[in-house]
Image (cartoon, rainbow, N blue to C red; front, side, top):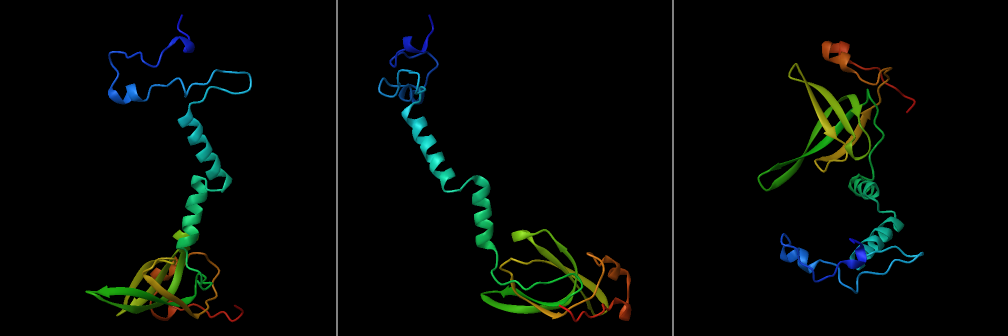
Length: 176
C-alpha cells in the first residue's frame, strides 16, 4: 500500500542528496487532512501568505512594471505634435564636463507612448538632411521647447525627405 501516511521522514532512497534529505517533510510540517483544511507544508503556506500580501498591495508583476515606468517618466513634458518646430536640449558629456547642446528641427514622427515615447526631429545642416530620434523621457534629453506650431494633416511627415529648400517649410498654426 503506497499511501501518503505510510511514508516516514527518515526513509532515504539511494538517489537522494543531502539537500533532499534535509528538505524531506517532518512530522511537524505534515498536517492530517480534514474536510476543511488541505495538506500544506509550513514553507508553502508562508509563500502563499507572501504572495497574498503582494497582491493585496496591488503589486502584481504588471503593477510593478507600471510603477517603475511612472517613476522614470518626466513630470513636465510639453505637448508636442507632428509638424512642430522644436528645440531639444541634448546632454553631451566630454570627459568629466557636461553641457547641453540645442538641436532644432521639425518633428516628422511620434511613436510609442509612456516611458518609451520617441520623437523624430529633422533639420537641414549644411544642405544635408539630418534626422535624430529622441526618447522624450530619457535623461539625455535636458529640455524640449516648442518654437513654432505647425499645421499638417498627416501623422508622419516622411514626404519632407524628398523636398528641398523652401518646399520643406510647414505652415504655421496659431490656434494651439
